[in-house]
Length: 366
Image (tube, rainbow, N blue to C red):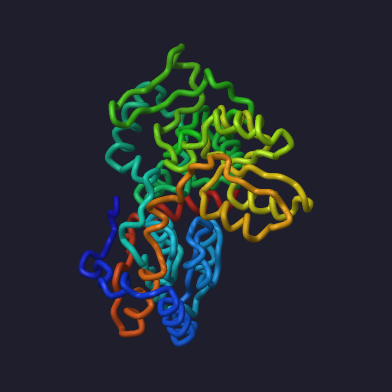
């Protein structure tokens, strides 16, 4: 849900950019990047295509990139090659003189869109009737600014896949129960790793506005929002079994956004950075089946020819919304800025940004 778009500056890419050949796109983008110099800073998420990543001044995961952007005080424009919730976070952390540009407004995140403010407020009201004031909310950074703000207002914090374990421990030091948005799999995997049994975890269904739990409701320690990553949920137990059968000596490493049963059967599970570091530091000749987004897997295959690397799911497609950002859109964004035209600016209202900042700051202080 693109809540905070400056509608007057929202435009679709002119057809001419889609008709350009690859050579011309690269040549013009290279020229514009050099010409604009320190006025722009281009961020590229790990899941972006190589055609975009080659122009990034920094690559990383969503929060990492927003933090990098916040340090670029000289940059007038932050061009975020990612999805809208990432650009929102960058705008929250950016200086008042900076503008954040998303080259294609259609670049959203299905997981982030699974939890909106109205649903969350209704859920909180109903859950408080069941559990009283015993809950603390945490939200994955893969959520909208409105959800981060909600969590900030209620004393909670954001989490990343890298620090989720630490943040869940922090939450339980504050309250008896945890309300985790919007990715049920990251919440479940993290809580389970910390020793909380599955039979003490419930799921909140925002569509039917009800809690899914079969036992004594007062035994619940973790309430998981019924959301997921459309990419990582497509890695299955069958994928793991097939790799075990065909490549018995292959390491299986997955992202914690995968289902609990997939993580349980894998050799390693961790954040995008964890996956990259594990493969990078592995000895030559080692074998890896990776359960994460396909653009990153292909990049790792290219970067490590001395290792055997495959996708855990051979039929996996790249993240469709992330792939909205392509070289034609990036070039259009750069040429527009060169002409003094600002298209597709992401702005978060101050009251929302202030509350969301509380959630982000609490995480950074833990």
